[in-house]
Length: 268
Length: 324
Ligand SMILES: Nc1ncnc2c1ncn2[C@@H]1O[C@H](COP(=O)(O)OP(=O)(O)O)[C@@H](O)[C@H]1O
Ligand SMILES: [Mg+2]
Image (cartoon, rainbow over all chains, first blue to last red; front, top):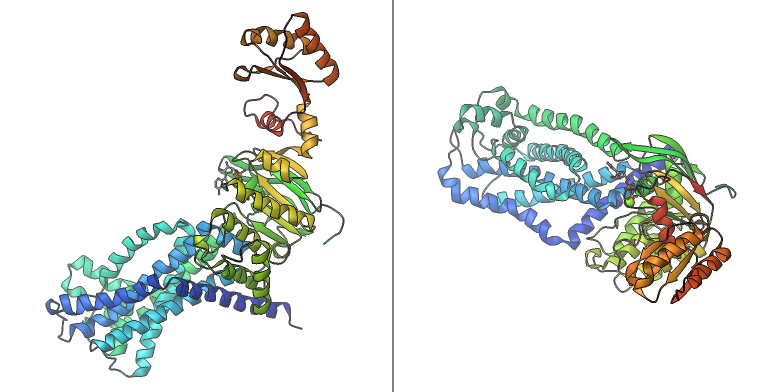
């Protein structure tokens, strides 16, 4: 005999696995968008690395592609928010979410299943990017432990963005509105240190770029991978790794409770 | 679950959206077994009522039990005993029909092998075997609806709630859904079904509740509603257009009520309190005036007439509640 809390926990885990499996089945049924999602960042790497790369300089010297790759890893992770949004908004718009809510399943599984699937998806995307990076001459130069820590920070950012995506999807509830999200994600992505050093930007933009959560993760990854960064002596630049933890934790602290509230609000 | 007592018992349900009272003190009692129809125009509050009864929505006031469990205090127990087929097909469009059913069966905590077996059963029962492994996105509206219905029946729930299950379906698909619902009711499932279609209510429902502006304004079997609300009617069809005006006056005087006139069909129709004396009076009046009608008949009102009278927006007596 298992106790009630133990049963609950078991169902919470198994229901969440079932929903993760559902997301994977989607990828098998519709491989094209998944492949496009995996290969698009590769295209960006080639474009920026070879097409524009010659014109880009890294303050303090250093190879632009070495500089670029950690930025691309973080961009790949950040774009994942669109997948989270689309999946949750489609389910909500189609009534699938309502069906889940009338099943005797663990309610938490709807989001934990989603989160697990999205993390897997992003991990796959990162693996492709790492391979692509190695192919164009990028390397981690500070040992495997620090490289793993960098990957951990990237996935932490992804995990934080899952909650932002879920919250937005439950507020807007329309899968088409992902366009609005894209319009938002791109400027946030580019106003960071992912492609160019903030020092080369006008003053106010540089400040925004330096404090952008994405920049924290990018700078921390450069540090942990031992790739050239722009150094810089601002607070943000000096404490990149700490900020790469603090920013996502802050996002989670805000958006996880908001998502839970929105979820409850579906029943109001 | 108590054996006696109603399967659905709701009292004083209220739900406001801003100024709109989606539910305005809705009471609903549905006995075990059979099909209960919730009939009402668009915006009457049917979906809101269904959402409260299926634990999807918290009412502002009121209480409800479904299959013996309180929707507010024990929503998990209610969920284990009901199946819901919502107004819009709630199935995964990317997955196949079989994958959908296995998914929902797994979320009902059936082990993998039983989930697969159950999915195969249901696909067979709802005539979806040929399309079982195609993505649902390629299904027709009727197939999707049948899959939706199957997904609501994973555990053979004692109570099945269907929200406008045939809206937007072609007649053939509608007939298929009707057959499925009849089969379920015959097997002992209590079905609560909302509809805007009178024909559907007349065909499927053993008992009806007419809902308007968030309240139940009439209840009974379709026959009882026709009797209690419409009374009988006398129809007169004339043979010559010139007779129309005179006939309207004569019939009106004979039965003491103004007839409804359909000039194109040369038809008068008038509600009558007492069918035999009224029929005699009408015939005598027409005969005395030398009018020879093409047809005279006494009939029950159609459900349409009852419904239109009940839900007439500007009628002075829409507030009355009729229980047959
Ligand atoms: N989430 C909501 N927000 C605002 N108004 C709503 C909401 N849901 C329903 N309503 C309003 O409540 C009334 C009843 O709606 P509904 O229960 O969907 O009616 P029916 O299903 O009978 O067509 C309608 O006027 C509808 O506009
Ligand atoms: Mg409705």
